[in-house]
Length: 197
Image 1 (spheres, rainbow, N blue to C red):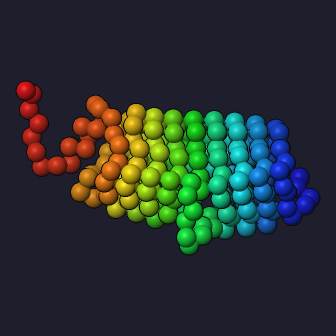
Image 2 (image 1 turned 45 degrees about the vertical axis):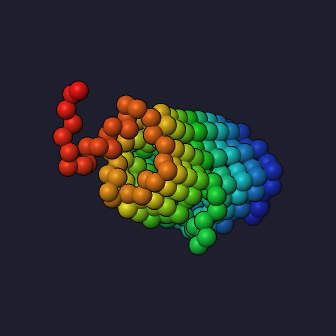
């Protein structure tokens, strides 16, 4: 499918690459629309400034691949182990952005992804433990069964987010934003009794 090693400013429509393998291909400022990458394997690839729109990336393998300033819109990105990617030692701002996506059953353990975005998403059973998510925007996202532990959430935006279970004593949530009534869930982990007024 891809005959060149590098692609710049191209738009790819309706690609059917499920279960395919891409190796050492680099994409710069490219857009992928209505593409099917389900269970594809990316090995040593690079995506810089790329956008994935209305695409299927469920269960992709991203071994040693780099994602920098990439956006995912109205896409399925389920079951991805993001720890297998090649991340720079110094994390940039907003390396990943998800908007109206399904990102359930994915893993971000220990990654440094400050100021990334995951808005209006379904993020069920996502593992955020030990990650640096300073300034992350999780507005309007459903975080059912997602895991937070030793996670840096300083300045995070949880406005309109729902179904999260975050222990304030085991995560850094200074200056984070929450909305009621969901914010009351922060009290569940504290040794207190809540009584009706």
